[in-house]
Image (cartoon, rainbow, N blue to C red):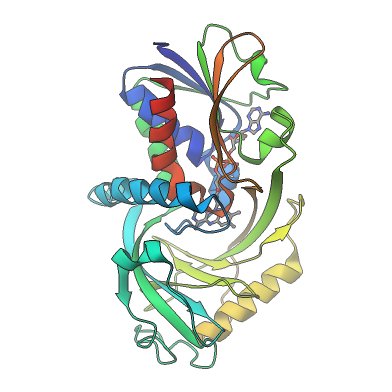
Length: 322
Ligand SMILES: Cc1cc2nc3c(=O)[nH]c(=O)nc-3n(C[C@H](O)[C@H](O)[C@H](O)COP(=O)(O)OP(=O)(O)OC[C@H]3O[C@@H](n4cnc5c(N)ncnc54)[C@H](O)[C@@H]3O)c2cc1C
């Protein structure tokens, strides 16, 4: 069994795999161009909720395994993980509750129809139906640093500013390579199945009396996610590689979220853009041989669910290696 592992990527996928391997006694090093906050992962809110990824038959078990781990992390306030009520709304008259969601549903659609009973008065005309779930929320401003810290405390090393043209360029002293390059896998392993699903969010100050997350996936996509010290307003989802902030999108996002919350438009503290690594044939979690004979485990293509699938996928990667 190889005891030295190199992980390419320091977003949520790479860091979570790193923790898994380092805590199981592997000599583990992460190599990445960017780490934590600068990655796509740093642009996410991030709620536990399977969205914009596949395949469904694998995604659900990965998501459920992740849910369990996250619930445990809530006990430690330093993780940035908390439990939140997620109100999933639709502008269509009848929203359907996915099968996987039933264990977590706290309110039926008929209850949240127009008059939401949050302490904030949500615009009654904004949505037609919805349901409510209790889900983990990872405050990425805290959670990614927590993962990096936990990884290093377990003996792992993080090497920032390293760009690989190909996986064979990873130091041969590492017997196994884990590819957690997100959208970067398009160039790294020439995966034409990957598609950048661009997401833009606006960070605004904390909203008084807002104690739940509000999401509507129907166009125009909108979500409001209160975090420890601010609030995330979203969002967009379009096929694009453009990492520049689009001021028109920010205005649209802030206007729609404020309309739903029935508040004056708040000032914008920050804007973030990230490329969800969507893969048309679903998350790639598989073993391959590199040209130099080493084993590589690919773990990328998590689309809009990288956080939601992170621990389930890391466990699966670990099983493939061991
Ligand atoms: C606006 C927005 C909101 C989102 N909200 C949620 C949410 O609520 N819940 C949820 O579960 N998900 C959410 N997502 C999706 C989630 O952010 C992604 O699925 C996740 O970040 C993917 O993580 P990753 O670690 O696989 O990739 P990334 O975070 O992109 O990390 C990739 C890493 O690989 C490195 N890398 C790439 N190529 C190379 C190379 N050639 N050489 C060296 N290093 C390389 C990068 O520098 C980086 O460190 C959201 C995404 C966006 C954009």
